[in-house]
Length: 53
Image 1: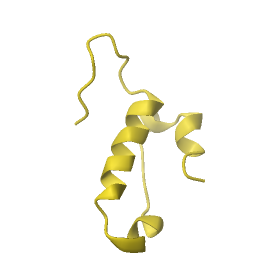
Image 2: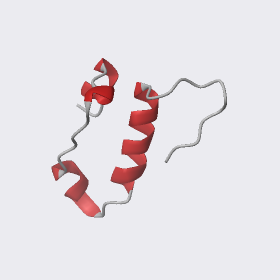
Image 3: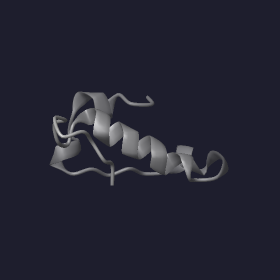
Image 4: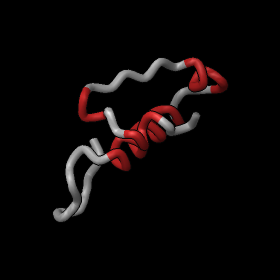
């Protein structure tokens, strides 16, 4: 869960990227590079597709 300010939009690419960064930081070693990430339609933003590529 990622808390946002009251005026922030929901399900933005920035939200998805922040959560993914936090999640991958918890995986030890080089295993994060071998992790498959799946998202639903809300994650289908261009910023998310080009992230860490």
